[in-house]
Length: 127
Image (cartoon, rainbow, N blue to C red):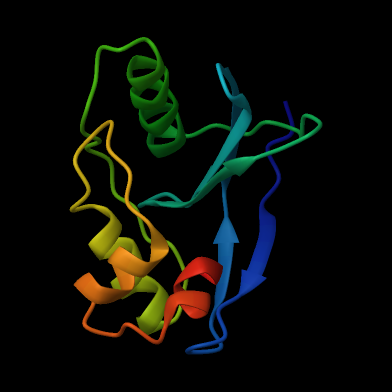
């Protein structure tokens, strides 16, 4: 395993730099997933096509364990610190998505109406 620090990205809203200290990937029923974390919180969980060098820490291990339990049908809620970078609009979309019951889906148009912004369908799709 590679234990060096990894640079992830600039956060455009406040121009600060996020230093990711942990990478860990996991096979899932829907593809390979990687979670990236600092010492305090997970910053991203996304699909990957090829493996990256792993450098797990306590937070990334916790997220990986809970993701595995979710895909095994043993977990419905997640309890690990998360801080995903995004605009205020994107964060509002993500918060509203959490109100959709497990196993259900809604259209982007309905989501836009729930957010009291029916003309924002395309922006919501991009979030």
